[in-house]
Length: 95
Image (cartoon, rainbow, N blue to C red; front, side, top):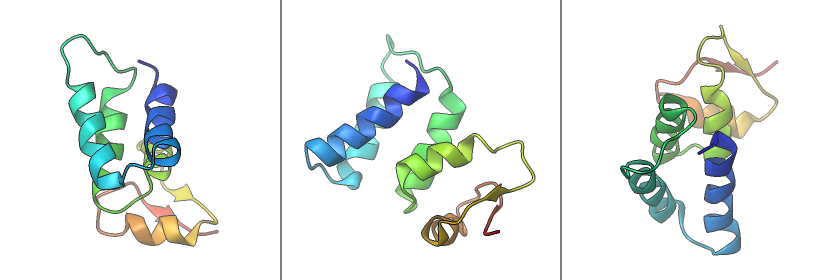
């Protein structure tokens, strides 16, 4: 499954169906763990799910996962920067 489909699934479950993050994240994790489901980037999705459980927005967490090999992730989003603190994410800083 492409990573973008995981992102869209999370958004639809929360946005269109009104499910809480506390319900969506475990559901996505369970779905990803099914024997017949193959993720495009399983490590990146797993990290994003973990960080989302820690309070980050899932989309932000998934984007941050793409920066795993970078020195830092620079963002104007102060909420994202604060949410990443203490979660073991790649470095997040504001410009």
